[in-house]
Each structure stands twice: as C-alpha cells, then as structure tokens.
Image (tube, rainbow, N blue to C red; front, side, top):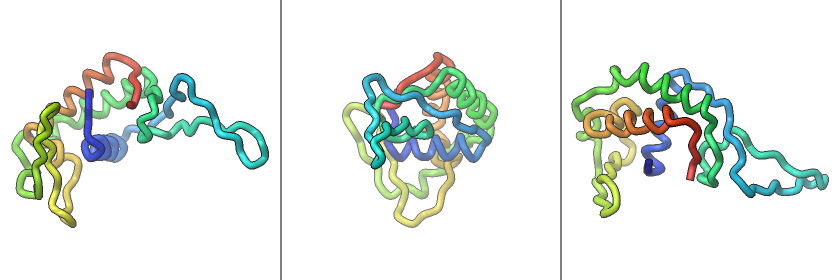
Length: 136
C-alpha cells in the first residue's frame, strides 16, 4: 500500500487522536547506530514511524491500529466532506489523484478521509490485519 506524506500524516493523527498508542517500531535490517559523543552506540528511535527507512511495525501494533480504525470508520463521512477545502488536485499516473487543501484552511482527518478517501482507511486496515509491515 502506498500513501502520500499528507495521507500518512493525517492517518497517524487520526489514529493517535482516536486512542491508538504506538508501541514502537523495530529497526530496519542492516541499520547501524551512530556513535554518541561519548563513543557508545546510539539506539534505534522506537517511536520513529515517519522516516521510511524500512522500520517494522510489529504485528501487535498493526492489530491495535486496525482495531482503532475499525472502531472509528463509521464516524468517517461517506460523502465528500473535504472537497470544498481542496486547493489543487494532482493527478499522478501511477496512483490515485492527490487532493491538497487550500493554504490556511482548517480540516480534520475525518474530513480528509471522507468520500472516496475512505477506501484508504479500509486498505490500511487490511494491511494491518495481515501482520507486521515495513514503512518504506
């Protein structure tokens, strides 16, 4: 599954504001910690859900994400509650169109994922229910 940065940010906001508490990611294969100033190796920043380095979301964490999304999905409008706040639509040949909000306009993740974008949430639930996954 592929999400834009805007979609992923809104998804993570929605999850967190709806009760999901991250348990932390696992370091990507081959990750080497940087040395600290005192010479000791650094640790993987477990709460790193954004860097797209190939870190793993555990099966338990993925299931918790799916549980929260399934619980709130009925609250996501089936009609397009975001369309009137869109400034630009970018049509990309390899994926669905990306709708960008007007600068300065306020919106919430429930509006963002309303209408056709609701499908992104159900896709993400399927991904989570399949078990652990990598963020790339």
